[in-house]
Image (cartoon, rainbow, N blue to C red; front, side, top):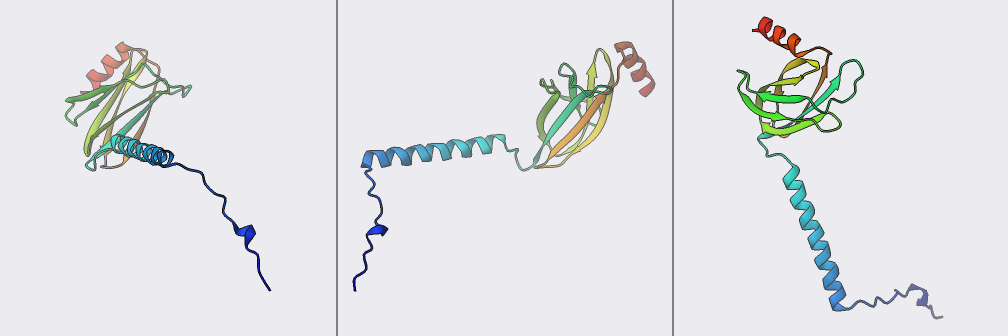
Amino acid sequence: MSVNFGFFKLPQLNLSLSRVQTLVGLAAGIISITGALVAFFKPAPDQGRLVAIVQDAKTEKAISDATVEVLTPLDALITTLKPNYFGVAHCTLGEGRYRLRVSHPRYLSEVRDIQLISSQNTEVRVQLKSGSAFGNAVRRVIHH
């Protein structure tokens, strides 16, 4: 009795050494670039990512031309951000307490105290109410 294992034949690969080297080099390049991008976009271990989403309070539409100021708890300016088309502004900061002030000429300003935690995203949704720069000035005088 004889058994024929002919149907278990593997297809013969016709790869030259230069083709194998090309494939290995391409794979190594893709892995290297991917690793660099992950390292670039990942915040440092002692830093957190602040994500501010600015919207109109009535319509919930994005306000892309607002000004987002990140301040210390004593109101010293750290950085100023501009939201993108979707009303999202973001930055990476050290862990700690901050004050977020969002303003726009056609809306009343909003101020929020926030706590950033290292290696985490902190998302703050700010809905601005219709108003004016005069209303903002009066509000600041009363607030202080």
